[in-house]
Length: 255
Image (cartoon, rainbow, N blue to C red; front, side):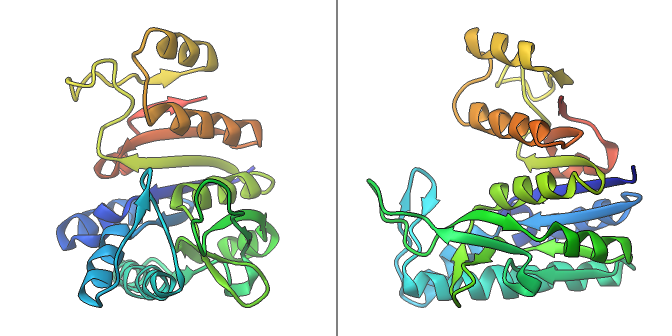
């Protein structure tokens, strides 16, 4: 089975000129088939403020009302996505920027209102992996923005980690997929105060032991739970690392 690397990077990396330039060079140097998924939350917040639109968050998740949906569509699907695509084209990478609505790549349902009304936020229900894999095999590198659609004419703001995970699961039928989540640390750390204490490999048993001992805690627990869901769906391995390390294949390998 042919190999594919799917990389998710947060908005902070792609929103600053210097870190974006480095990311694109590192991404371009990765051999074989690849996909990039990006965020862009800080840019969306900044532009919303300039337009006089209030940003509201609950537990780190954005409330997306009709006005905020316009902003995230402009920022994620336009400004951030096309900056990345143009940067990759300059490096000889034939990139194509896509939202979930383009070619019906990713369909979502609007999140139901429970304790919180998140507004126009989508929960992914369907990924068109046939079409995505065809593009990839033609040498096209998809750059996925964190927007999906409901097939009723509405765009939906969708978490970039979810986009990456769902795309990786769907593409696992066609490729041997390595899913890389990039964040601010070099990997999962044995000691959060020691940047160099990266745990190189974590299997399920080790994960449970680290949680029991309090070594892995907080937001890292759902990150790793999501990693194992991806593996259960056929993804070969999940790597948690720093964006500047993606071309080195270092970090924490979850298997």
